[in-house]
Length: 192
Length: 192
Image (tube, rainbow over all chains, first blue to last red; front, side, top):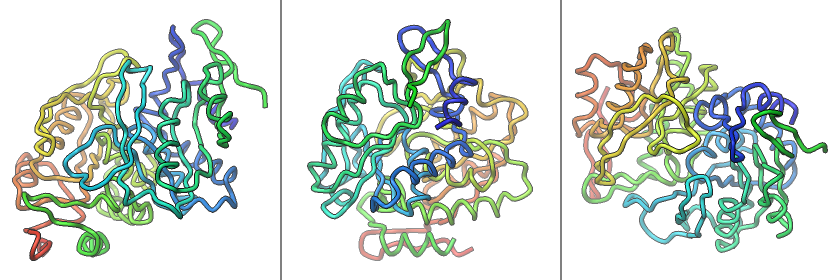
């Protein structure tokens, strides 16, 4: 998606160690006008797929997912990273390794909100190692819902997550796919 | 707001100990069509106030804030509960006590995204003891931005947070104000 690529070039900051800082518009401050265009693009890509639920994960996937959901006319469910006492009853759970934060955590979704009959689009801000996405896919599969695919804002295509998930037979649509990046030369995108 | 009150009566579940479970439409599964109407109501209430930034806190405030931001035509910044290595540089920080989770934590916002000149509307899903809101207000005040007010989805008006924040001279608009509730008789709203 040209608009997102241009924004990454303009406002993204590449740090050593494969870190892309996009917190001025994507995952700390959020440019809602940009999100609206991203939501329209997800809706175009997954048009006619019968999506009736969007699944994301706290925290930075939620904004993108909610704006996209307006296009799909469906609710959003977000997986939680910690079990709180306000979620009672049975939950679907899986384990996610965060390479950014260097820890492993469980994610959960109430069984009330993910079940057979749902046609689920997973939306998240980043795809790198694929651990979070793999965890979300497992929740969908365990629930008996149908996984339509995944919609990702920024894929670090030089990391293995995207290939891994696609090799599982899951459709993955990323709005910006980064082929390489470094602090000196900036960001290069995958030529589609 | 009638629509939200009716939804709380229909789908909210009152538990012992002052717990209102609204995770089927507000803070786990999110009804985006409802959020759109809530966003329009916040925009009506704060019309003409020059809001150019919405501040919320992860995770369950983000969806409501992003949908509302479409009405205001402004970006959203969400306060983070843990410092990650992807947020570099200086941050505004304050301390919040979570009565739901029984712990104290720091919240942070990058100084890049909250500063003098901003006219800030704080949006969150719940107001009960007021600790999170007080923390967010402190971030705004420390930054030199102007606090326009707070927009809350559900206020537990039988708990002290709303009175506390209003006594600080802050405008607080809550879409549903609960006067009392218990598992037997359900939810009663404050008569406006």
